[in-house]
Length: 108
Image (cartoon, rainbow, N blue to C red; front, top):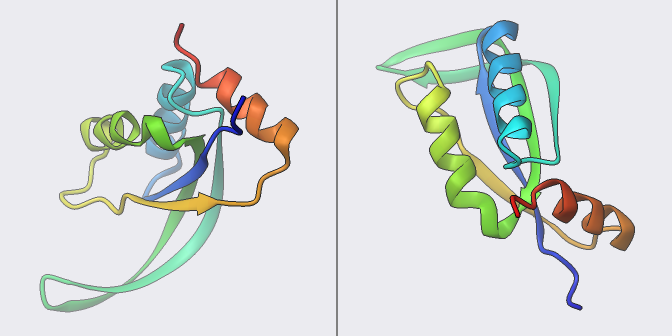
């Protein structure tokens, strides 16, 4: 059996309540095996003005095959007009961890 392709999908949010709401929804829907929240500072330009804001980064561990569904769920639930939604390939991955992620994201 081939090893599952694991990715980390990353997004950011302004509030802990929104971050937890999205994290819980992704895991409950079996779109993610795990979602980690990290406090960060973001510096960016938005609508012509320089911004510096505290945010929470969500790192969503999932299967590459679930990316479209994860992106759709984030877009559905996210309060930002233009949320960051990027995916990073995780390779190599401890095989037992990859199998665990796959089991958690199995909707069958």
